[in-house]
Image (cartoon, rainbow, N blue to C red; front, side):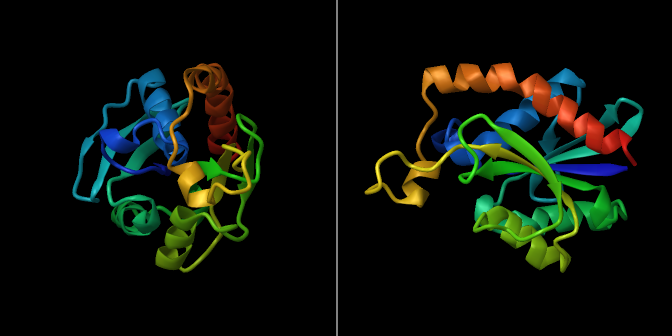
Length: 177
């Protein structure tokens, strides 16, 4: 089994924030593979299913970004999933908008959801899919304000266009093991 943790903040207020790209992509992937997400004992929306022959649990923590580690740890502990079978999907301000990369291990680069997961698991050795939301164009805009700002309609369309490629990247990680 793999755990795919898609990070964001719960509630309508945050639904189309840049920080919620993990939730947006998680909803797309869950829909693509017909995985139903529902409230769980992990303080997360969660759903089990199969992706290209691999059993997966998609987890969307409902504890806000900065406390994502608790629900992720509960899920990996419950299913006895080792960290190397965890994939975290999250926003990254260091990547230009709509660019995405995968990596294994490393630091949190200031991403508080990833920081929380590393603290809870006691290791940085898990996969990440980093989706670029860019830095604020205006240097007077704080990073926190930028990531909590909403995507424009055009940006949401570009995300919809990129989502199948993100799903392919996730499948490549799952099937390489």
